Image (cartoon, rainbow, N blue to C red; front, top):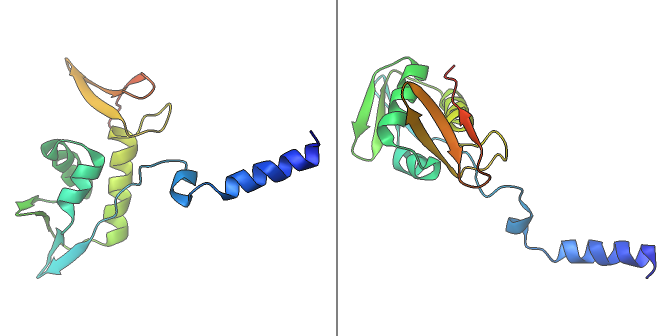
Length: 137
């Protein structure tokens, strides 16, 4: 087999792969959709964010509100935040949460569970088997 012919075959094979398969990861960190009402912010796609992250609502809200530095609660399908917050700030906080509590540090996959042992919290990956202590920042 000719080396040049082999490279052409590889290039043609790669072109035939669907775009969604070419992505390195099937997981994308969700972005907030917000609505302002008076001097308050509502995250309107809160349920979708929780479903994508596959985490407990109470855990997410506890960590998220602490990072935002405000009071908040679930109102219907939305998360209410006291105060006005920019989309970029909230998206950055969700990204930090995802990297700390969702994505495996070894294989970078979202197939993880949070396990508590005593006072320590661990992130256990079901994809690669890694287990790492979560250090809260």
